Length: 457
Image (tube, rainbow, N blue to C red; front, side, top):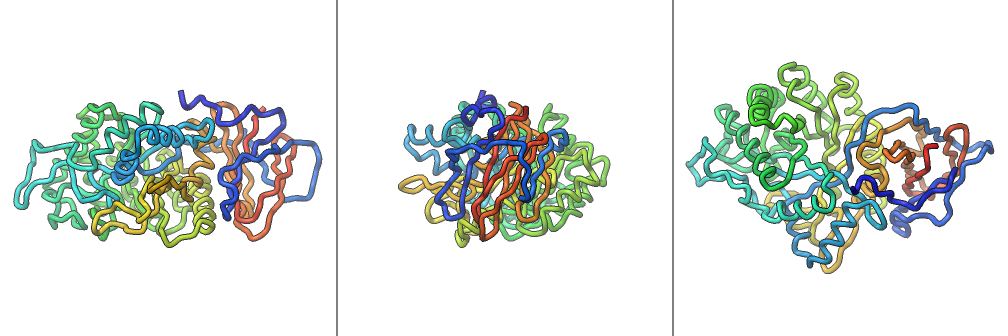
């Protein structure tokens, strides 16, 4: 199975393999020729101590959102090229990066060609019995591409979120903004159940859902507002019971799925014991607030999982700044604050940041740009530095915090240690990796990220 593949050559005892990406792009997830070595020598460099005996959360995966636009662009590649690209994305061996988690939209996201749901009706009509539900109403490439993906990595986890309910269920009868009408709570829960069952009928098991992407964002197209009190009502009296009644108790349910500036929202939901009984955790983005909000929620509800589910890269950004910020805050920051997943946003776009809905985000760069050739962009490398080495089932372990060298460490199911370190400064920095009483000296170039891998024993 893909989870068992060793993504690097066999390590010699006491050696550390190093993969490096630099902001000037001269090195892009490049395996360094010379491994580091552990020794007994002491030195005066800053120390990052790693202790596999101190364990924290289990890691469930790293990846991207397979938007409708991503699926369309990838599906248009010639079959041999598409197969090679998918294997590169999904498998950790060789040149692969080992993506292990994907996020889908339930209906359209703003990176679909047009707005749609799976139960659209003409103006003035409704369908409370959902007799017109159609899983193939839009983004037709998603399901066939997912089948190809799961044939390569059947262990891949998939979660999904809705950007909007069908417009006939909403207060403003529009794809943008508006709220779910209270008299449609039950039918919207049934709609989400139908989606999950339709996907299973096609061989695709959705592991987790959130009922609303960015529930306080009323400007995106599509979008829908759902206040915390409304999400409490919807989860505890409608969606939670509907999932159980449909035999879908194995689908994990997450609340929120929005920014770190309003931790009060998921906390209000968790405070309701009846709603909380149906929930697995909360999902997070970082377009506002501080990543430490995840730890705030974890401290109060440690039994609730945390998923980091989205962060975009804009076309007005630069590789250096985006690499430094995303590795520090999204990758290292979310994991150090108890997230079990790290998902960057759009997997693929064209050279013009298309497709997107007319009112959707027009500046979103994919992890891949698919034009006359395939270009691997900054989000690809952010995720690759973890996904290739930190396989699902790995555990975050202790690594000493260094202000000038943000870092995070893991123990993998194969018994290896993985340490990711960022140098976002203007000069190279030397430091000591300390493990089980031995030291290895590493030098990390300016504006660079490195992944260090060694055997635990």
